[in-house]
Length: 241
Image 1: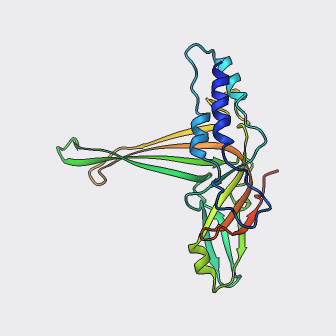
Image 2: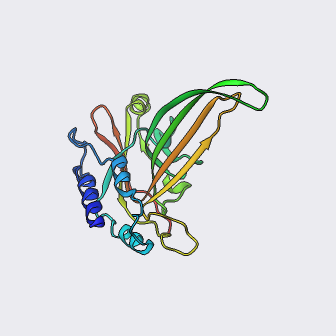
Image 3: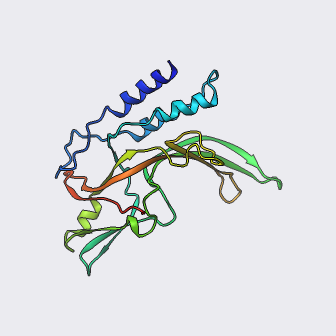
């Protein structure tokens, strides 16, 4: 009964959006894409009090979505975008220090309080919470595999870059490491990472970050104009062999 309830909640959440059509030249205004935040909440399920570890792992495995693809609009473009006036093209490159594609980020201010260090210095400290929702395609090369270009005339380039939006078309897949010996994972679809930074005298900000990373198979990266939602480029990423 526990699995049935969770499964029904998951399906009703992730199937609420219209599917992305690869043949579109313009993304319809009625198309809102899929909600990664809600999908993560549906997949983030805890082990029940009266549920054995084997039962819990079995239930997680059965939460695998169908072959349906999911389309996520990015809050900001998770690529380094540069224009070359000589080649008349934009180049999109993965940000070298970030192995994941960030889809959404939610910042929330916490309480403020006064604190002192060992030397008696008193500072007003402010809390800041950050929650990020990322995609991770484990078969996608981190270097040149995620680099692609968009031809554009020099005259139009500034306006295009200012008006540029991006969406990612994916299939949700289980992490192949799930269940392997010496690999600690609570969920085959989600990895969760925490980062805490304590306040200092020079930086009185107490920062707490939580990142959800959804394991997926990237099908297409779609670049479009935000003003009229016309598609400029839809590219399939290169994969490792």
